[in-house]
Image (cartoon, rainbow, N blue to C red; front, side, top):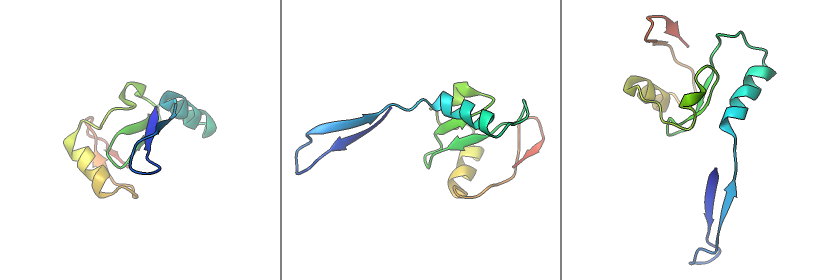
Length: 92
């Protein structure tokens, strides 16, 4: 749920709320692009909160836990980067 307070003057008069199903967004991404079963796409916001994670939906709505990954995401927010994953394989 995304919420936004409404202040037409100095006093808050309402809160706008939009329900967003992040798990459905992840599934729609997987279906739309006809991805291989083991392909993973992770989408984050500017605060490293996971918006979509195709292989691990339990991470959706939570911040990236690995400090080095979170730092790289923040440094390269609009770009791709290469990292060594926990299994030793380089990932883009």
